[in-house]
Length: 363
Ligand code: NAD
Ligand code: IPM
Ligand code: MN
Image (cartoon, rainbow, N blue to C red; front, side, top):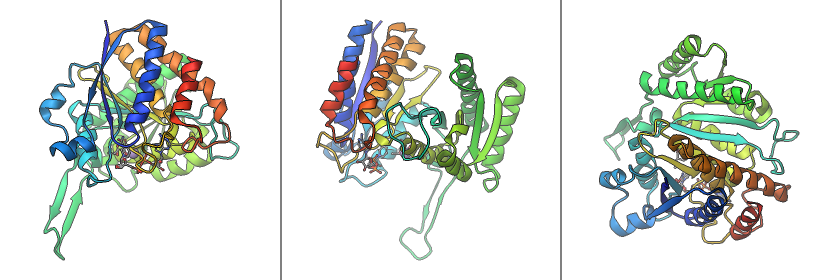
């Protein structure tokens, strides 16, 4: 039973960090004895400039038989902002119904944080970002464009269905962490209910109704998103699991990346936890055109994303060897991190190749 993985390396540093992560996967696979195939796909800025197409519906359908997608990054200096981000990344997340964006915020031992007096014990939580609704649906439009009377709207959208499936995933995730002894069983909803009295109200009621009905053993906390930003910096130790709508989740997870060492280590999974379509794993960072092609991008974020891919795909397919390989990769990353103490994970001063070699040796 081989895992079939579609690979979209994408733009900028994407191919560099994906290449490194695939080397790591190959060694872990031979150590733990799981089989897989990879299939490279050309989508991204260069493909768009050459063909005039980002990705078609038929090409997305061709991804459905795969067990997972590994994505580097998209974003090209010669392509207008939004075309690739909406036309590729968001289109994949929406069409494959990857309704959970799981983004761990965990400071690994040895990695430096800009927060004084905080360490791996304090910075250790998970953000569960809703991934198919909210301001991201593109509802709204521009009328009378380019005139003095121009008007633009972009609407925040929450459905009971979309909110409920995200909240249920978050409650289950928090419960599983508590059972495994890796969390205290506390779920924090982050929103802005004091201003967003329509969407926020729907989220808040659903949170409490589901919690009261099915998760009495999970402690519920609510924070406004502005206060959450302050707490993430001042006392990150108060968080165990956060559940948050799409737009606020995008913003607070960049803050999360910064406190956990930088974009060089922030990993994510766009999950369709039902297994009805493949999930997609990617570093949180973008194509980083400022450092592309220089062998200085940190591959750790993509390597951890590959571990997430193997853990989630192994769970869905019942492939224990893939799950063992995920643990092996995480352990190898933990082993090399103390070498980075005092350095910024975004400007390590160690080449992509050299970091990859350290991880391969630790495997
Ligand atoms: P970015 O994440 O690409 O870069 C932000 C900063 O972090 C830069 O200074 C960069 O050098 C640094 N950085 C990023 N990844 C790094 C790594 N692996 N190692 C070391 N340093 C790293 O964000 P941006 O500059 O705002 O966006 C660039 C392009 O990427 C844009 O087109 C944007 O839309 C796109 N983008 C794509 C994704 C994605 O594909 N998932 C995510 C975010 C941004
Ligand atoms: C991310 C990115 C994307 C998002 C963009 C590139 C569409 O910022 O993965 O966090 O907003 O979700
Ligand atoms: Mn983002």
